[in-house]
Image (cartoon, rainbow, N blue to C red; front, side, top):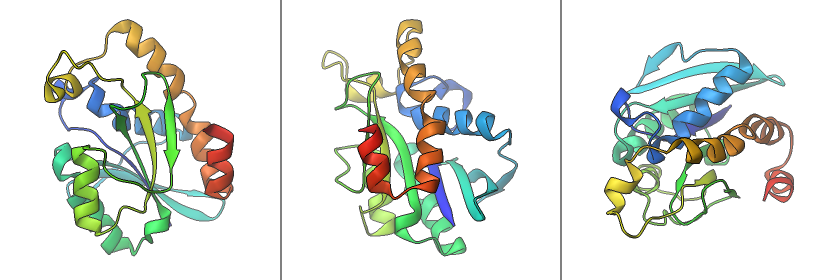
Length: 184
């Protein structure tokens, strides 16, 4: 079983904000697989699908970003998901808007959602797709990540989001090294 989590903040006021890229990617996957988030558990909206005879859970934690690790921990414990079968999709201040990086593991880089995941899993060795949102040093970081994208930024960002189904398809079929080599 694999767990694919898109990080974000719940609520309409956070739609199209920089911190909600993970939610935007899950929405893209839902469209791609022609499914809906049809279940609620452990403060998360999720769905399950079968892909190549393997169960896949797509999850949006419904707690705020800095508590999302609690939701992920509960899913991991309930479904007995191995740390190697977790993929987190999140924003990255240190990566240029319109670009992305795939990683096996790593530090939180100051990202509160990743900090909370590491705290709750006791480990930072989960796979991740980090999508660049750039960083505007003239705006307080909290205000920046909770700020909405401009139309031009959304156009650029959608080029990355549109690649997510292909990346996920490969992730579900290939060793992660191969996926990293193909997309990094």
